[in-house]
Image (cartoon, rainbow, N blue to C red; front, side, top):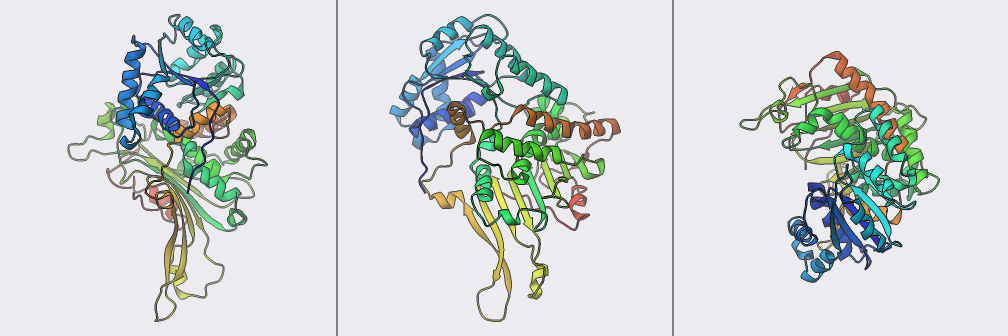
Amino acid sequence: MVSTVIPVPPFDLVIFGATGDLAHRKILPSLFRRMAAHQVPAGSRVIGAARSKMSRADFRKAAGEALTRYVEAKLLAPALVERFLGMIDYVSIDAAGEGGWGPLAKKLDEKPDSVRAFYLSVAPQLFTPIAHRLAQAGIATPESRIVVEKPLGHDLASARALNAELAQHFDEHQIYRIDHYLGKETVQNLMAIRFANALFEPLWNSHYVEQVQITVAESIGVEGRGAYYDKAGAMRDMVQNHMMQLLCLTAMEPPSKFEPDAVRDEKLKVIRALDPLKMSDTVRGQYRANGKDGSYLDHVGNPASRTESFVAFRAHIANWRWSGTPFYLRTGKKLSARLSEICVVFKHPPHTIFPQVDTLRGNALIIRLQPNEGITLRVAIKDPGPGGMRLVEVPLDMTFASTLGPDGEMPEAYERLIMDVIRGNQTLFMRGDEVEAAWEWTDPIIQAWEDSGSRPLPYDPGGAGPIDAYKLTGSDGHLWREIAA
Protein backbone atom coordinates (compact mmCIF):
# COMPACT_ATOMS: atom_id res chain seq x y z
CA MET A 1 0.00 0.00 0.00
CA VAL A 2 1.53 3.32 -1.11
CA SER A 3 0.22 6.63 0.15
CA THR A 4 -0.29 9.53 -2.23
CA VAL A 5 1.33 12.80 -1.17
CA ILE A 6 -0.29 15.99 -2.42
CA PRO A 7 1.90 19.08 -1.86
CA VAL A 8 0.38 22.11 -0.20
CA PRO A 9 0.98 25.69 -1.31
CA PRO A 10 3.93 27.65 0.15
CA PHE A 11 3.11 28.87 3.64
CA ASP A 12 4.25 30.81 6.67
CA LEU A 13 3.26 29.00 9.87
CA VAL A 14 3.72 31.08 13.01
CA ILE A 15 3.81 28.94 16.17
CA PHE A 16 2.96 30.94 19.28
CA GLY A 17 4.34 29.10 22.29
CA ALA A 18 7.11 27.71 20.10
CA THR A 19 9.38 26.94 23.07
CA GLY A 20 6.73 24.80 24.75
CA ASP A 21 6.23 21.05 24.98
CA LEU A 22 3.53 20.69 22.31
CA ALA A 23 5.58 22.54 19.72
CA HIS A 24 8.67 20.43 20.36
CA ARG A 25 6.91 17.10 20.82
CA LYS A 26 4.27 17.29 18.07
CA ILE A 27 4.20 20.35 15.82
CA LEU A 28 7.85 20.61 14.73
CA PRO A 29 8.30 16.83 14.26
CA SER A 30 5.06 16.69 12.25
CA LEU A 31 6.22 19.46 9.96
CA PHE A 32 9.58 17.75 9.50
CA ARG A 33 7.94 14.45 8.54
CA ARG A 34 5.73 16.20 5.99
CA MET A 35 8.77 17.93 4.53
CA ALA A 36 10.59 14.57 4.37
CA ALA A 37 7.54 13.20 2.50
CA HIS A 38 7.89 16.03 -0.07
CA GLN A 39 4.63 17.68 0.93
CA VAL A 40 6.10 20.99 2.10
CA PRO A 41 7.15 23.16 -0.86
CA ALA A 42 10.27 25.28 -1.08
CA GLY A 43 9.84 28.78 0.25
CA SER A 44 7.71 27.73 3.21
CA ARG A 45 8.69 29.03 6.63
CA VAL A 46 8.08 28.03 10.24
CA ILE A 47 8.34 31.05 12.51
CA GLY A 48 8.60 30.43 16.23
CA ALA A 49 7.09 33.07 18.49
CA ALA A 50 7.47 33.11 22.27
CA ARG A 51 8.48 35.36 25.17
CA SER A 52 11.92 33.76 25.50
CA LYS A 53 14.75 35.98 24.34
CA MET A 54 16.71 33.90 21.87
CA SER A 55 18.26 34.25 18.46
CA ARG A 56 17.19 32.43 15.32
CA ALA A 57 20.27 30.22 15.69
CA ASP A 58 19.29 29.34 19.27
CA PHE A 59 15.77 28.36 18.23
CA ARG A 60 17.07 26.31 15.33
CA LYS A 61 19.31 24.46 17.74
CA ALA A 62 16.35 23.77 20.05
CA ALA A 63 14.30 22.60 17.06
CA GLY A 64 17.10 20.25 16.00
CA GLU A 65 17.17 18.76 19.49
CA ALA A 66 13.39 18.24 19.33
CA LEU A 67 13.78 16.36 16.04
CA THR A 68 16.48 14.15 17.53
CA ARG A 69 14.25 13.32 20.47
CA TYR A 70 10.88 12.84 18.77
CA VAL A 71 11.55 11.77 15.16
CA GLU A 72 12.61 8.28 14.13
CA ALA A 73 16.38 8.15 13.61
CA LYS A 74 16.03 6.59 10.16
CA LEU A 75 14.33 9.77 8.89
CA LEU A 76 16.97 12.16 10.22
CA ALA A 77 19.20 12.35 7.16
CA PRO A 78 21.60 15.28 7.69
CA ALA A 79 20.56 16.96 4.44
CA LEU A 80 16.87 16.79 5.40
CA VAL A 81 17.51 18.15 8.88
CA GLU A 82 19.60 20.98 7.46
CA ARG A 83 16.88 21.81 4.94
CA PHE A 84 14.20 21.85 7.63
CA LEU A 85 16.20 24.00 10.03
CA GLY A 86 16.79 26.38 7.12
CA MET A 87 13.01 26.98 7.02
CA ILE A 88 12.95 28.08 10.66
CA ASP A 89 12.93 31.62 11.99
CA TYR A 90 12.15 33.10 15.40
CA VAL A 91 10.63 36.25 16.92
CA SER A 92 10.58 37.11 20.60
CA ILE A 93 7.08 38.39 21.25
CA ASP A 94 4.87 39.48 24.13
CA ALA A 95 1.49 37.89 23.48
CA ALA A 96 -0.38 40.36 25.68
CA GLY A 97 1.84 43.40 25.12
CA GLU A 98 3.42 45.47 22.38
CA GLY A 99 6.82 43.83 22.01
CA GLY A 100 7.69 41.83 18.91
CA TRP A 101 4.60 42.44 16.76
CA GLY A 102 6.38 44.89 14.43
CA PRO A 103 9.26 42.50 13.65
CA LEU A 104 6.78 39.65 13.08
CA ALA A 105 4.75 41.77 10.65
CA LYS A 106 7.92 42.73 8.80
CA LYS A 107 8.94 39.07 8.38
CA LEU A 108 5.52 38.06 7.09
CA ASP A 109 5.40 40.99 4.66
CA GLU A 110 8.48 39.55 2.96
CA LYS A 111 6.20 36.88 1.44
CA PRO A 112 2.73 38.38 1.06
CA ASP A 113 1.54 35.63 -1.31
CA SER A 114 2.22 32.72 1.05
CA VAL A 115 -0.59 31.07 3.02
CA ARG A 116 -0.46 32.62 6.48
CA ALA A 117 -1.38 30.45 9.50
CA PHE A 118 -1.09 31.11 13.24
CA TYR A 119 -0.90 28.13 15.60
CA LEU A 120 -1.78 29.12 19.18
CA SER A 121 0.10 26.51 21.21
CA VAL A 122 -0.39 28.59 24.34
CA ALA A 123 -2.52 28.74 27.47
CA PRO A 124 -6.22 29.42 26.70
CA GLN A 125 -6.16 32.80 28.43
CA LEU A 126 -3.80 34.01 25.67
CA PHE A 127 -6.11 33.09 22.75
CA THR A 128 -8.00 36.37 22.85
CA PRO A 129 -4.99 38.72 23.37
CA ILE A 130 -3.11 37.09 20.49
CA ALA A 131 -6.12 37.24 18.16
CA HIS A 132 -6.56 40.92 19.06
CA ARG A 133 -2.89 41.74 18.46
CA LEU A 134 -2.84 39.88 15.12
CA ALA A 135 -5.73 42.01 13.92
CA GLN A 136 -4.44 45.25 15.46
CA ALA A 137 -1.00 44.84 13.86
CA GLY A 138 -2.51 44.12 10.45
CA ILE A 139 -0.88 40.69 10.43
CA ALA A 140 -4.10 38.70 10.08
CA THR A 141 -5.24 38.92 6.48
CA PRO A 142 -8.79 37.96 5.34
CA GLU A 143 -7.47 34.57 4.18
CA SER A 144 -5.14 33.77 7.08
CA ARG A 145 -5.94 30.92 9.48
CA ILE A 146 -5.80 30.67 13.27
CA VAL A 147 -5.48 27.32 15.07
CA VAL A 148 -6.57 26.90 18.69
CA GLU A 149 -6.07 23.87 20.94
CA LYS A 150 -8.34 22.63 23.71
CA PRO A 151 -9.55 23.46 26.26
CA LEU A 152 -12.06 25.52 24.29
CA GLY A 153 -13.75 26.95 27.34
CA HIS A 154 -14.49 25.49 30.77
CA ASP A 155 -18.27 25.45 30.35
CA LEU A 156 -20.92 26.73 27.95
CA ALA A 157 -20.64 30.35 29.03
CA SER A 158 -16.86 30.49 28.60
CA ALA A 159 -17.02 28.63 25.27
CA ARG A 160 -19.54 31.14 23.96
CA ALA A 161 -17.36 34.00 25.17
CA LEU A 162 -14.28 32.53 23.43
CA ASN A 163 -16.17 32.01 20.17
CA ALA A 164 -17.48 35.58 20.32
CA GLU A 165 -14.00 36.97 21.00
CA LEU A 166 -12.41 35.05 18.12
CA ALA A 167 -15.26 36.10 15.83
CA GLN A 168 -14.39 39.76 16.42
CA HIS A 169 -11.19 39.29 14.44
CA PHE A 170 -11.64 36.11 12.34
CA ASP A 171 -14.48 34.69 10.28
CA GLU A 172 -15.59 31.13 11.10
CA HIS A 173 -13.90 29.77 7.97
CA GLN A 174 -10.58 31.06 9.32
CA ILE A 175 -10.84 29.39 12.77
CA TYR A 176 -9.45 25.85 13.16
CA ARG A 177 -10.35 24.25 16.49
CA ILE A 178 -8.02 21.29 16.49
CA ASP A 179 -8.82 17.88 17.99
CA HIS A 180 -5.97 15.50 17.25
CA TYR A 181 -8.28 12.47 17.51
CA LEU A 182 -9.91 13.53 14.24
CA GLY A 183 -6.53 13.39 12.51
CA LYS A 184 -6.02 9.71 13.27
CA GLU A 185 -6.15 7.45 10.22
CA THR A 186 -8.55 5.04 11.90
CA VAL A 187 -11.07 7.78 12.69
CA GLN A 188 -11.05 8.87 9.07
CA ASN A 189 -11.36 5.24 8.01
CA LEU A 190 -14.52 4.97 10.11
CA MET A 191 -16.11 7.41 7.69
CA ALA A 192 -14.68 5.53 4.71
CA ILE A 193 -16.02 2.20 5.95
CA ARG A 194 -19.47 3.64 6.57
CA PHE A 195 -19.93 5.81 3.52
CA ALA A 196 -17.73 4.25 0.81
CA ASN A 197 -19.09 0.70 1.16
CA ALA A 198 -22.56 -0.76 0.75
CA LEU A 199 -21.82 -3.48 3.29
CA PHE A 200 -22.25 -1.70 6.63
CA GLU A 201 -24.53 1.30 6.14
CA PRO A 202 -27.78 -0.73 5.78
CA LEU A 203 -26.95 -2.39 9.13
CA TRP A 204 -25.85 0.81 10.89
CA ASN A 205 -28.97 1.37 12.98
CA SER A 206 -30.91 0.14 16.00
CA HIS A 207 -32.51 -2.72 14.04
CA TYR A 208 -29.16 -4.47 13.77
CA VAL A 209 -26.82 -2.79 16.29
CA GLU A 210 -27.22 -4.01 19.86
CA GLN A 211 -24.82 -1.58 21.54
CA VAL A 212 -21.88 0.72 20.92
CA GLN A 213 -18.91 1.06 23.29
CA ILE A 214 -16.33 3.85 23.13
CA THR A 215 -13.31 3.52 25.42
CA VAL A 216 -10.39 5.90 25.92
CA ALA A 217 -8.20 4.43 28.65
CA GLU A 218 -4.83 5.60 29.97
CA SER A 219 -2.42 3.57 32.08
CA ILE A 220 -0.74 6.70 33.47
CA GLY A 221 -2.06 9.04 36.14
CA VAL A 222 -2.27 12.83 36.23
CA GLU A 223 1.27 13.38 37.53
CA GLY A 224 2.62 16.65 36.15
CA ARG A 225 -0.86 17.83 35.06
CA GLY A 226 -2.48 17.93 38.46
CA ALA A 227 -3.04 21.69 38.62
CA TYR A 228 -4.90 21.69 35.28
CA TYR A 229 -6.61 18.33 35.61
CA ASP A 230 -8.16 18.95 39.01
CA LYS A 231 -10.01 21.94 37.55
CA ALA A 232 -11.19 19.90 34.56
CA GLY A 233 -11.69 16.20 35.30
CA ALA A 234 -12.37 13.41 32.87
CA MET A 235 -15.67 14.86 31.65
CA ARG A 236 -14.20 18.20 30.62
CA ASP A 237 -10.78 16.89 29.60
CA MET A 238 -11.89 13.96 27.42
CA VAL A 239 -15.65 13.54 27.01
CA GLN A 240 -16.70 17.03 25.97
CA ASN A 241 -14.23 17.06 23.06
CA HIS A 242 -12.43 13.85 22.01
CA MET A 243 -15.09 11.31 22.93
CA MET A 244 -17.96 13.50 21.75
CA GLN A 245 -16.30 13.66 18.33
CA LEU A 246 -15.92 9.87 18.20
CA LEU A 247 -19.58 9.47 19.18
CA CYS A 248 -20.66 11.90 16.47
CA LEU A 249 -18.68 10.20 13.71
CA THR A 250 -20.04 6.82 14.75
CA ALA A 251 -23.68 7.89 14.95
CA MET A 252 -24.10 10.65 12.37
CA GLU A 253 -26.21 10.44 9.23
CA PRO A 254 -24.45 10.29 5.85
CA PRO A 255 -23.54 13.84 4.80
CA SER A 256 -24.58 14.96 1.34
CA LYS A 257 -20.94 15.62 0.43
CA PHE A 258 -17.54 15.10 2.04
CA GLU A 259 -17.20 18.80 2.67
CA PRO A 260 -16.55 20.69 5.92
CA ASP A 261 -19.98 22.09 6.67
CA ALA A 262 -21.87 19.06 5.37
CA VAL A 263 -19.93 16.76 7.75
CA ARG A 264 -20.14 19.16 10.69
CA ASP A 265 -23.86 19.73 10.21
CA GLU A 266 -24.45 16.00 10.70
CA LYS A 267 -22.22 15.84 13.77
CA LEU A 268 -24.11 18.74 15.31
CA LYS A 269 -27.42 16.91 14.78
CA VAL A 270 -26.11 13.96 16.83
CA ILE A 271 -25.16 16.16 19.78
CA ARG A 272 -28.54 17.89 19.72
CA ALA A 273 -30.34 14.53 19.60
CA LEU A 274 -28.63 13.20 22.74
CA ASP A 275 -31.00 12.65 25.66
CA PRO A 276 -29.99 14.55 28.81
CA LEU A 277 -27.73 12.45 31.04
CA LYS A 278 -29.19 11.23 34.32
CA MET A 279 -27.14 10.70 37.47
CA SER A 280 -28.16 7.03 37.45
CA ASP A 281 -26.56 6.63 34.01
CA THR A 282 -23.14 7.87 35.15
CA VAL A 283 -20.31 6.52 37.31
CA ARG A 284 -17.38 8.64 38.49
CA GLY A 285 -14.14 7.42 40.02
CA GLN A 286 -10.77 8.44 41.47
CA TYR A 287 -7.78 6.11 41.48
CA ARG A 288 -6.30 4.99 44.80
CA ALA A 289 -2.62 4.81 45.71
CA ASN A 290 -0.67 1.79 44.56
CA GLY A 291 2.29 1.01 46.80
CA LYS A 292 4.74 3.91 46.58
CA ASP A 293 2.78 5.42 43.70
CA GLY A 294 0.38 8.00 45.07
CA SER A 295 -3.35 8.36 44.63
CA TYR A 296 -5.18 10.90 42.51
CA LEU A 297 -5.57 13.09 45.60
CA ASP A 298 -1.79 12.92 46.15
CA HIS A 299 -1.02 13.77 42.53
CA VAL A 300 -3.25 16.86 42.46
CA GLY A 301 -2.28 17.94 45.98
CA ASN A 302 -5.89 18.35 47.04
CA PRO A 303 -7.17 15.85 49.64
CA ALA A 304 -10.70 17.28 49.39
CA SER A 305 -10.95 17.01 45.60
CA ARG A 306 -14.19 15.69 44.14
CA THR A 307 -12.85 15.76 40.58
CA GLU A 308 -13.14 12.50 38.65
CA SER A 309 -10.19 10.70 37.04
CA PHE A 310 -12.65 8.16 35.57
CA VAL A 311 -16.12 8.51 34.14
CA ALA A 312 -18.45 6.02 32.48
CA PHE A 313 -21.95 6.67 31.24
CA ARG A 314 -24.78 5.32 29.15
CA ALA A 315 -26.11 7.66 26.49
CA HIS A 316 -29.12 7.45 24.20
CA ILE A 317 -29.66 9.24 20.90
CA ALA A 318 -33.27 10.24 20.35
CA ASN A 319 -33.65 9.78 16.60
CA TRP A 320 -35.01 7.14 14.24
CA ARG A 321 -31.65 5.55 13.49
CA TRP A 322 -30.54 4.92 17.07
CA SER A 323 -33.67 4.80 19.24
CA GLY A 324 -33.20 2.00 21.77
CA THR A 325 -29.49 1.40 21.15
CA PRO A 326 -27.32 2.25 24.19
CA PHE A 327 -23.99 4.02 23.70
CA TYR A 328 -21.58 3.24 26.54
CA LEU A 329 -18.64 5.61 26.94
CA ARG A 330 -15.81 5.43 29.48
CA THR A 331 -12.47 7.11 29.99
CA GLY A 332 -10.03 7.12 32.85
CA LYS A 333 -6.52 7.33 34.21
CA LYS A 334 -4.48 4.55 35.80
CA LEU A 335 -6.36 1.77 34.03
CA SER A 336 -4.94 -1.58 32.94
CA ALA A 337 -3.71 -0.42 29.52
CA ARG A 338 -3.53 2.47 27.12
CA LEU A 339 -6.39 1.90 24.71
CA SER A 340 -8.72 3.93 22.51
CA GLU A 341 -11.36 2.11 20.52
CA ILE A 342 -14.90 2.14 19.19
CA CYS A 343 -16.78 -1.17 19.24
CA VAL A 344 -20.05 -1.59 17.33
CA VAL A 345 -21.72 -4.81 18.51
CA PHE A 346 -24.36 -6.27 16.19
CA LYS A 347 -27.37 -8.28 17.29
CA HIS A 348 -27.49 -12.06 17.10
CA PRO A 349 -29.17 -13.70 14.09
CA PRO A 350 -32.96 -13.72 14.44
CA HIS A 351 -33.10 -17.52 14.36
CA THR A 352 -30.52 -19.93 15.77
CA ILE A 353 -29.77 -23.13 13.84
CA PHE A 354 -26.47 -23.85 15.59
CA PRO A 355 -26.64 -24.66 19.32
CA GLN A 356 -23.41 -22.78 20.00
CA VAL A 357 -24.58 -19.44 18.64
CA ASP A 358 -26.00 -18.36 21.99
CA THR A 359 -22.58 -18.79 23.61
CA LEU A 360 -20.81 -16.59 21.06
CA ARG A 361 -20.43 -12.89 21.60
CA GLY A 362 -21.77 -11.95 18.17
CA ASN A 363 -20.47 -9.91 15.28
CA ALA A 364 -18.60 -6.77 16.22
CA LEU A 365 -16.71 -4.10 14.34
CA ILE A 366 -13.80 -2.81 16.41
CA ILE A 367 -12.12 0.42 15.35
CA ARG A 368 -8.90 0.81 17.31
CA LEU A 369 -7.30 4.24 17.50
CA GLN A 370 -4.38 3.38 19.77
CA PRO A 371 -2.21 1.45 20.11
CA ASN A 372 -1.86 -0.58 16.88
CA GLU A 373 -4.34 1.40 14.82
CA GLY A 374 -6.63 -0.76 12.76
CA ILE A 375 -10.06 -2.23 12.17
CA THR A 376 -11.25 -5.72 13.07
CA LEU A 377 -14.52 -7.46 12.22
CA ARG A 378 -15.40 -10.31 14.59
CA VAL A 379 -17.29 -13.15 12.86
CA ALA A 380 -18.25 -16.76 13.59
CA ILE A 381 -16.91 -19.56 11.42
CA LYS A 382 -16.73 -23.34 11.57
CA ASP A 383 -13.82 -24.69 13.54
CA PRO A 384 -11.72 -26.52 10.91
CA GLY A 385 -11.57 -30.30 11.09
CA PRO A 386 -13.89 -33.28 11.43
CA GLY A 387 -16.22 -33.91 14.31
CA GLY A 388 -19.33 -31.89 13.61
CA MET A 389 -20.27 -28.24 13.28
CA ARG A 390 -18.28 -26.44 15.94
CA LEU A 391 -18.31 -22.64 15.75
CA VAL A 392 -15.47 -20.34 16.76
CA GLU A 393 -15.06 -16.57 16.65
CA VAL A 394 -12.25 -15.15 14.54
CA PRO A 395 -11.21 -11.59 13.65
CA LEU A 396 -11.04 -10.35 10.09
CA ASP A 397 -8.08 -8.11 10.75
CA MET A 398 -7.01 -4.89 9.04
CA THR A 399 -4.37 -3.72 11.48
CA PHE A 400 -2.53 -1.00 9.62
CA ALA A 401 0.89 -2.22 10.72
CA SER A 402 0.18 -5.55 9.00
CA THR A 403 -1.41 -4.01 5.93
CA LEU A 404 1.30 -1.43 5.34
CA GLY A 405 4.13 -3.88 5.90
CA PRO A 406 7.41 -3.39 7.77
CA ASP A 407 8.32 -0.27 5.79
CA GLY A 408 4.91 1.36 6.06
CA GLU A 409 4.57 4.59 8.02
CA MET A 410 1.46 5.74 9.85
CA PRO A 411 1.38 9.54 9.77
CA GLU A 412 0.87 11.33 13.07
CA ALA A 413 -2.53 12.98 13.51
CA TYR A 414 -0.92 16.42 13.69
CA GLU A 415 0.73 15.89 10.31
CA ARG A 416 -2.62 15.53 8.56
CA LEU A 417 -4.30 18.31 10.51
CA ILE A 418 -1.56 20.90 10.01
CA MET A 419 -1.53 20.20 6.27
CA ASP A 420 -5.33 20.59 6.23
CA VAL A 421 -4.93 24.01 7.87
CA ILE A 422 -2.60 25.05 5.06
CA ARG A 423 -5.01 23.67 2.44
CA GLY A 424 -7.92 25.50 4.06
CA ASN A 425 -9.86 22.26 4.65
CA GLN A 426 -11.93 22.38 7.87
CA THR A 427 -13.60 18.96 7.55
CA LEU A 428 -11.66 17.47 10.48
CA PHE A 429 -11.96 20.55 12.71
CA MET A 430 -14.73 21.50 15.12
CA ARG A 431 -17.10 24.33 14.31
CA GLY A 432 -18.06 26.85 16.99
CA ASP A 433 -21.65 25.66 17.30
CA GLU A 434 -20.41 22.06 17.77
CA VAL A 435 -18.27 23.10 20.70
CA GLU A 436 -21.13 25.02 22.30
CA ALA A 437 -23.62 22.17 21.78
CA ALA A 438 -21.21 19.71 23.44
CA TRP A 439 -20.87 21.99 26.47
CA GLU A 440 -24.63 22.45 26.56
CA TRP A 441 -25.00 18.68 26.95
CA THR A 442 -22.17 18.11 29.47
CA ASP A 443 -22.75 21.15 31.72
CA PRO A 444 -25.97 19.90 33.40
CA ILE A 445 -24.50 16.57 34.53
CA ILE A 446 -21.33 18.26 35.80
CA GLN A 447 -23.52 20.67 37.75
CA ALA A 448 -25.61 17.78 39.08
CA TRP A 449 -22.47 16.06 40.37
CA GLU A 450 -21.35 19.24 42.10
CA ASP A 451 -24.79 19.87 43.61
CA SER A 452 -25.00 16.31 44.95
CA GLY A 453 -21.85 16.75 47.02
CA SER A 454 -20.96 13.11 46.33
CA ARG A 455 -17.38 11.98 45.96
CA PRO A 456 -16.13 9.88 43.03
CA LEU A 457 -15.85 6.17 43.80
CA PRO A 458 -12.31 4.91 44.56
CA TYR A 459 -10.76 2.32 42.25
CA ASP A 460 -7.51 0.42 42.17
CA PRO A 461 -4.90 1.28 39.55
CA GLY A 462 -4.35 -1.32 36.86
CA GLY A 463 -8.00 -2.33 36.52
CA ALA A 464 -11.06 -1.13 34.61
CA GLY A 465 -12.33 1.53 36.99
CA PRO A 466 -14.96 1.37 39.75
CA ILE A 467 -16.96 -1.85 39.94
CA ASP A 468 -20.17 0.20 39.66
CA ALA A 469 -19.31 0.90 36.02
CA TYR A 470 -20.23 -2.70 35.26
CA LYS A 471 -23.76 -2.01 36.44
CA LEU A 472 -24.27 0.40 33.53
CA THR A 473 -23.81 -2.35 30.97
CA GLY A 474 -24.96 -5.22 33.19
CA SER A 475 -28.42 -3.77 33.72
CA ASP A 476 -28.91 -4.09 29.95
CA GLY A 477 -27.45 -7.60 29.82
CA HIS A 478 -24.17 -6.41 28.31
CA LEU A 479 -20.51 -6.46 29.36
CA TRP A 480 -17.75 -3.93 28.92
CA ARG A 481 -14.96 -5.03 26.62
CA GLU A 482 -11.66 -5.89 28.26
CA ILE A 483 -9.16 -3.03 28.43
CA ALA A 484 -6.07 -4.64 26.95
CA ALA A 485 -3.33 -3.30 24.68
